[in-house]
Image (cartoon, rainbow, N blue to C red; front, side, top):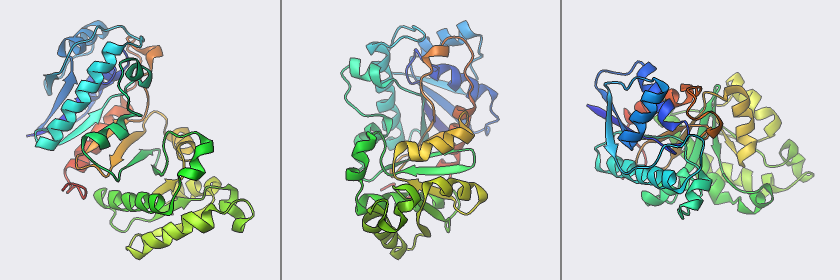
Length: 316
């Protein structure tokens, strides 16, 4: 029996709704069970209010309680969400869970609750004691790895180093193996317009990005030179690259969300456990209205199952 843990995220968002819909409307293997981690009472309350059936493939792991107040940011909801994350990680590390899928959390709610973490990715790395990790987004036919994540644009150049860029290229290469593409081609975005235009429009390509690419190639990874960001995603969709490494958040996610907004998946690479999530937020504006699409959550669950069926290269 393969058990997949699904954290309910912020109970006042769409997390429980999309989890119930994704499980109930998906065609899942007979030997798979889903463990909803959070508040069973809260999930069942939403299921009854929104008239969504609770699948027989669902088990519950109770980690706390929080009042259901659709669309409202509360510290209690975030404390429950944080407890669910910790329980899911513990289950994956112990082997009780084959993978974890996380519903969206609210960073403002975490702040109100006194939980000081930048986001899921960084917190999962902390909980699993992982130093080298990365966030890959998938959707619309693209796989995109971000070298930097939630930083102001002004802070991006200083945050880029040859080592960081190389490590993210290598994480991408290992991920492609996990996806069944051992010789997958990795395209790397330049930071500057026209990839620096030979140094005229910036030197990061010459001093950081291309040297990092050369070092990754020396380790056997199939990597392009730095490519202008305004063409590389077209080339990736054409099939030239199996994944793209972007230097900063919006450089990579703007094109991906343009073509795959309601189907995107987030996967954390480098962890000794499997973690995926839908690539959207809590959607407080439609919470409690039975309007949320479960497509992204369904895709995240399917990817978690696929990844859990292959050896994890980062599991010690």
